[in-house]
Structures are given as structure tokens and as C-alpha cells.
Image: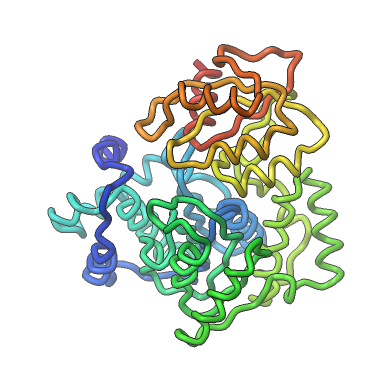
Length: 382
């Protein structure tokens, strides 16, 4: 069974063999008839940008796949085709097919993400006109980078996953932007260094790139505002929508506002109750976007954090909208020790307690990672 197979693969590795995925794919690529691929890289906003694009292209009449990660509750949230998550039954069929294509060593050695990337692409092959292929945490060495693509979309780049990507914007930007194969469309960036790295790569690899704003006109901005109002999009989701529309314009598509309706990806400032918002963001850039989007109100923050996240800075950014923090238990080896979080909250003069249940009279924000949102949803649904 696919779920048992994946559960036996570690999600994280101390050392990564960057040659493995290209080597394996090169051996088996005859089994893949690739559609037109739009590769999405960056730090934040990859999932929603991809879902906006996938939904719009599907509404225009194309067969479209969207590969995103990680999932919140169920694995098949990662693999979307023509408007819905692919069933686990169909994924099981493709899993058995992929096991026949790979040799025993490859089956054993491929990482969780490498294997699931191949699984998604095997399902999409010959069925899709377009695939929105979202990179994991990396760029040039990411499993998704082995497939030839039509275009690279670059969402905002910020500090994250420092142990894998480096601890400076320059090192992170180099790793991510080296994934560009031909042409890229670049979202609004916080750091000038991103553009500087991009110019260097342009000279080295003869790529071309456009700033997203070059591809939008007054009518587009009017449409963006109307779509955002209709869909109740907060600021950062509106920015992701703008990037998606710039991509469609570059590709020569004529879109309608209705093509983007109901296109939001779950877990991105999603209102799941009248008094509960959940967001899977987990880094400083996400916290900054949320604090801006929710400014003017106060929430009880249901929170936890991985050890490698800059949770002090995240909590400082969220403090203006925090009434109190409730720490939720998360079963994951990467989660920070509760005592450290408690000490940090006390040093920041933020009131805290342990999460038990929801008070219908209070407003809540669930934030910290996919694992935090998963833990909350599982607790809520028993």
C-alpha cells in the first residue's frame, strides 16, 4: 500500500544525495511523456500561486495538474487534477506502476519527496496539457528541477530552511534561482540581493526574466481588486493572484475574473469557523504578511514551532495582533521543546498557556507550520 510505503520513508535526511534524482529520472524518463510544465520556486506563496494558475487554466478548458507540498491531513492533498485531489485509489495504481519501473535500489534509496514527485509526474504524464510543479524547499537540486519546463515562476524569497539552503539571502537566492532553465517571472521581492543574484545567473546561463508588474496593465489591476473582493483575499493572497495573472498574460491567455473563483488553497488564512482562522505559514515572511493582513484585531494564537525556525522574530512580528498564545502539542521530532517556547514567550511579555479547547467568545489564529494546523484539526475532529 502506498501509505505504508511512504510511512517507512524518512521525511528528512542529515545528508542529501543531489545526484540521485537526476540519475534515476534519466534512466526512466522514457516512461514519461511530459506536458507543458510551469515550475514554481521561492520561499512563500508557491502553493496559492500554483492553485490560482491551475484553477484558471482548468476553467479555460485545459487538463491541468498541480503538485504541491506538504499536505495537512491526507497525502492526496499534494496531487490535484482538474479541480480535485486525486483519489488514493488511483494513486495506489500509479504507485504499483512506478514500482515496476524502478529497480530495487532506487525504490529503497529515493527520498519521500523524490518518490512522490515521480509518482505525481507519472500520473500527470499523457493526461495533462499543463502541470504546475511546485518545488519543495530547494531550487537547483530539488527533485522537481529534473523535468524540462516552459517557464519558472519565482515567488518572494526570504530566509528559511537555513540548514539546507544557507543563512544569507544571497546563498538562498542562488540555490533557488539556479533552477531557472529558460525564462522566469519574478514576484515582488523584499531583498535587492535577489535581483542581483538573478542578474548574475542571467549572464551565466543566458536566461531571461520579467518582473511580474511588467506584465500587468490597468485593466489587470482592476480585475485583481474585483477578484480579491469577491474571494475575500487578504493582502498576500492578492499579491499571489497578481503573480498568477502576470504568468497567464505572458503565456498569451485571455482570462475571465470568474476563472479564479474558489481557487484558494486550504490553510492559507482559511476561516474554518466564524472565530477560527488557520494558516500553514511557518517563517518570518509569512508572519509579516499575516500581521499586515490581520492588523487592527487581536487573536488568541494557537502555536508551536520547529526548532530551526526563528520563532522569536515570528512572535515579535505577530505580537501586535496577539492577545494570548496557547501552545498546542505536536508529535514531531523537529518540534521545539515546550520549555524553550515558554521562556521565549515570557521574555517577550506575551501571555501563554497550554491549548485545551476553543472558547466560542474568542477569536483564534492557528499558525506555526503544517504540523500545527494538522494537530489542531485532528484535535478538533477527534
